[in-house]
Length: 157
Image (tube, rainbow, N blue to C red; front, side, top):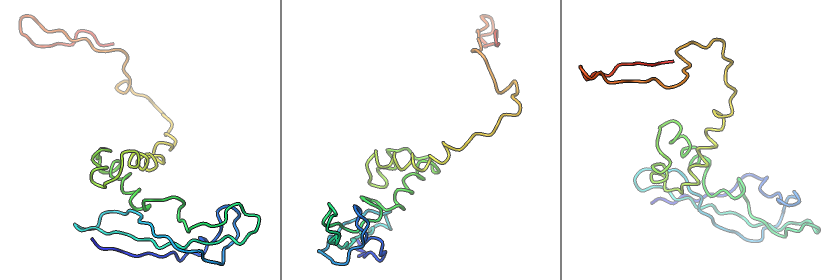
């Protein structure tokens, strides 16, 4: 397994989530391991070296914070998108996608919901004409002919 070390270059991560003031003093560091798409047979492991900042605002209830892009994300956006597309485009089941990507069922299902939200919330086109083949009321009735053994349609509304 290959290990990739990451550091944050976005300066906006220095802004305190509680008060918005930019921090200037580093308190320490933390290492997290966000998950991403499998790569090859051996795969990649990411190690994100985040800085922990002191908030310089005296009235801020939050004294320190770590860099977060996006907040609380344990998976990369690429992995979430791939999990949703695996179900939407490829036609895989949620269970199969969880096994292939080594994710939990709720994570894959939420990724699929997010992926399908654009399609599900899109307005439907207005119906201009409705043909008789596109609407049916009731169920057809089939009966078997006693002499020939063949089935024939006896009632269709």
